[in-house]
Amino acid sequence: MPKNKLIAPFVKWVGGKRQLMPEIKKLLPKRINTYTYYEPFVGGGAVLFELEPKKAIINDANAELINVYNIVKKNVNDLIAALEVHKANNCSDYFYEVRSLDRKPDFELNSSNIERAARIIYLNQYFGQF
Image (tube, rainbow, N blue to C red; front, side, top):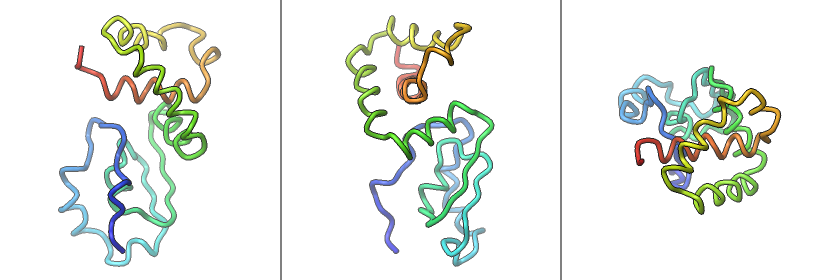
């Protein structure tokens, strides 16, 4: 089955496997897509998105990252709307303000899962720009 070019990692993650995909693919079973794909440390999802498995179970030690994947799966339109807010306000002061939000003790209580997911994607995309 040809690869869907619209399916690709949407965050860059430390330790990403994108550059290693040719070597990783050599080690995988020929009929990998007939199995359930398990990814204990999904990160940016390079292997997941390259293989496009019919069924996958993913995990990561970073709970905020797993929240992002859950929101992409269940509420992508609301996530896109939340990302538009970040795009409209993008400047260095705004970036540092958003970056510091999780240092507030009530951050998780006062932020929805969608807002937290948009924050992670925004910070990931603009880190180092300012």
